[in-house]
Length: 394
Image (cartoon, rainbow, N blue to C red; front, top):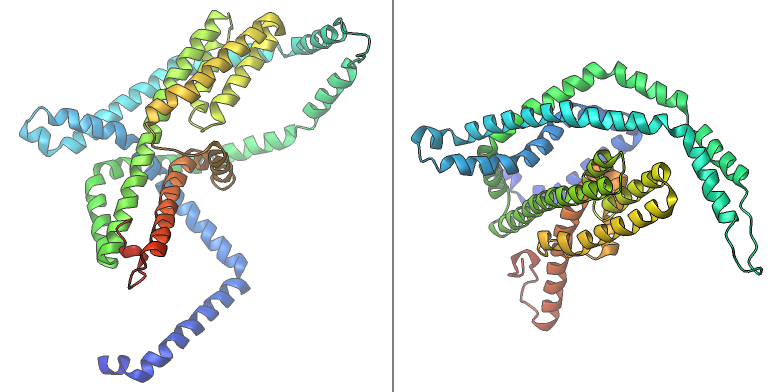
């Protein structure tokens, strides 16, 4: 039988067989595209809780590994043997404590501030009218004549508010409650799978390395492992950097808003710290939102103007000095590439896509730089065999 498959006739017709098989597969997928997309959608809905659990486990692995290193210092045989399980248990206790703290302190404060802000919505029309009147009454040279129609602006704002589909929002809320049981079940699966992934991390990692080594050549295996480690390092560095920088920026902004007398200093500082996870745009949007709230609640001049100058100065100092120091040159990307990466990530992956865009693009840029260096080296010293994967540059 082996001789038959190794015969010259079989070797000559085998490529045509593969081609015909591919044509049949493409035809079936095209003819039943709806069935194909529905199947992919069902498969995605099944595995999405486990993918969410993998993301949670990956993020929690940072503090879990740190706890594991600490408890290993005890040098106790039992602790050394079960260090991973103990670290996961301690991390679960710490996580529950933090969630309880958030539910009992931060969320009530955020809710009260939001309720207070919404209760004063009726006063914001008068605030806008006063701003427009101040602009209309400014003493300017006679050559400059203008008049802002406040009624037209108010009508435009109210018209924009009226376009918000309240019914659609309510339908979405009702649908959300209708799928609450499924959402809770998916959340439960994500949490349970993340715990198992944290406990089994070392075994899963060893299995993945063994599998890659088994199905690839030695050089390809080394290349995959190299860039996998680099991507892992980029994600770790990015999460660490954005977390520390978010804490620093959020704390500074909270203190600044408190000194300006804002009643919403805690909520705005918290929002700004969270938005800082979104690269390039996050802190700018958070700062602009804080300035807008100060302008509506405390007046445009001089409080909001001075607050805007101070807060944007802090944001620029953080973006140009503190954050680069924390990153240490790991993500040497141009601002234009960052903007493109974040935009593409948001389009295909939403908020999660925005968060993971920078680490992924940094690795892709490194691969492209290596390939360009390899091609340039080829022009200078052409090798006997043009094997890109075997080059030392990789």
